[in-house]
Image (tube, rainbow, N blue to C red; front, side, top):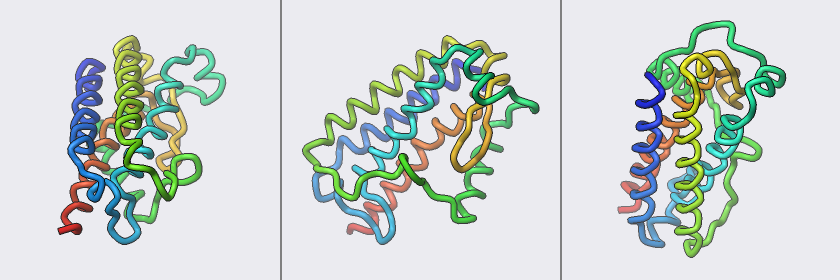
Length: 177
């Protein structure tokens, strides 16, 4: 997928989850199925996961190569990356450390959190469009669950991650009724 399509997918997927959460009432925002996060926690997690990608995409290329190296293989396709993520999740992979949301988030913070997510995603889209196709496949970043990913793969993951959590929110709402 070329960078223009990737930028559009990022925008589309995050806009969908932002609208989805914006339409939830307080009861729906706070409902969490057993051993799952509620919608506000999912929102917080998305912000925490997009921020470092956004920051890394703005670093000079020599910093990326010095800190993380360069790719020694071609980028995987979007579908291959998503399949790999599902395999890791099925094997018990979960968010950890700084990516875990707090236990409680006040529904009054919903709009501020939605604005944060929208802002960081817009910045990421702009940074994606400024990258060359070559650099998207050349430079790598570490992912806590998937290991070393090219910038393109990290953007694939980031785009998919929004729809993954959007589906989790939908499934959580089904259990509310």
